[in-house]
Amino acid sequence: MLNSGIPSMKERAQKPGFSVYHQAPTLIIISGDPRSITYQFDCTLALGTMFLAAESLEIGSCWIYGAAAALAAEENRALARELAVPDGFVVQSCGAFGFPVGRSQPAAPRKDDTITFIR
Image 1 (cartoon, rainbow, N blue to C red):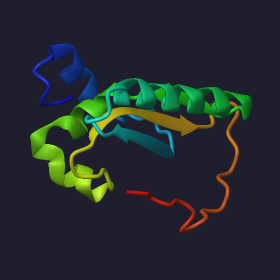
Image 2: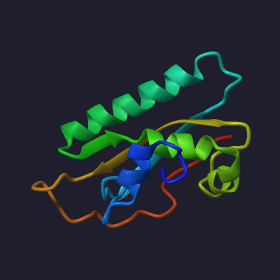
Image 3: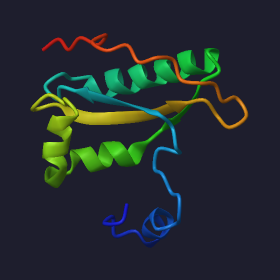
């Protein structure tokens, strides 16, 4: 946001305590293979479904476009690789998830090795 060239975004990013993720503890990154004719729709639908499921569990969620835009930039390709975005895939959408203020609950213990990447 600081390098966006958009004055209002730069001003917002410089505010003390600013977090593009709204202080949420979880960011989910959805990427797709642009060789698929419907990857944009598939990715969008996947995140939308996660938002609905989160709400049913009283978990707050928010679409974070800035993260997708940042990860699409060539200068951030190394970061995208570090975040396990497959080579050739496009980050289409990202969502922040957490308990909203007033509904805060302690985080569940982390379960390591519960995500499987199929390539």
